[in-house]
Image (cartoon, rainbow, N blue to C red):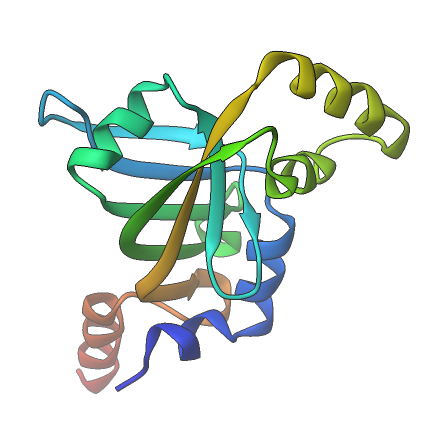
Length: 163
């Protein structure tokens, strides 16, 4: 049986974890209903790190219900679709100032000359932030074009070949 670490060690999964500008975070809101939001993040080599305002609805909701699901995906056709799926528990920590992970995550989508102004604006805006760390408890990497499919599709393909 493959582990979360095995799935995430695949070179394409590693590339996506490092380079994708956004992930989709699934969690239950404070009212108990599901949410999925796109959000910037940083992969630190072992966990996903998301930073947000202390007053954000997601911080309040995750403090009550920390179980999350994450999708990082790319591709515009079925044959070039790739996805990293992660499940885990969010660990929340309120920190003074702007966490470096927030700035590092933003670097993925900014020209280097834009980063100092962004960092200065964040320092003015945030006295504190919430650092949300998600360590994968379960993970899967799919690459449809390369044949890395969900188990049920692999089984169907195998059965079709046997006919």
